[in-house]
Length: 109
Length: 157
Image 1 (cartoon, chains in turn blue, brown):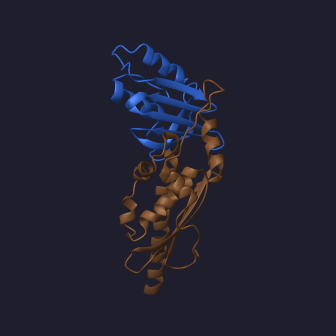
Image 2: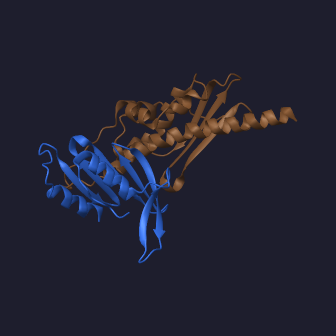
Image 3: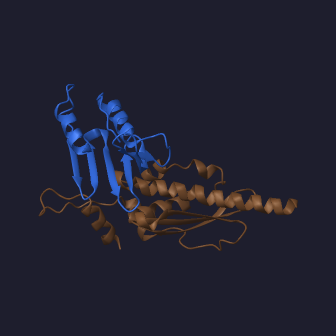
């Protein structure tokens, strides 16, 4: 899950992440909240009836991602931006984490 | 009432210690627009100088109807809105109707959801409300422009 990946990332960060920042990654009731201290808070919301994930980022603002199933090989579930169909949730999250912390991590979604 | 909106926010942020009640305050601008919303109501959507924007979907919780009355110079002379949704959605659309009054239909397209969110100090989870308000403005302008095109083709014929 995204939460597990992020927890690992921050615990094992090789470049020191500011200790003053309270980093909290919390998932409950379909809402993933990623608090990165002074860098702001991301909120990812599961909207089950619409099959969407609603994203809110201090860097890129609010956006909606639609579920798309890619039938290649075993098949993958990806989330595509309703604003720009070339943009995916996984890629955007990777990009923003890289911008802030230099992490190189891929989320296959 | 405001308490229903507050409960929604508490639910999506489960406190670690169940006996500790986290009290979150709405920014005074939101409370102001929630308790004294500006420009509530409706125009006749068939009026040729009225543009109607309808955005959102009940399934995701918010629906906004924003209407503009535009004069011959393309200036928005009056606005009305009706919103079904949380306090932040109501406040966002109320702010939108205030800000677009007196501006031209092209000027208002540059109003960004980030401006509305900053004015109301919206928390991350409510940024979608200001986004929806921005969409409502665009939708209303688009509808008015479409009507003008239809009017012009009729006149030409």
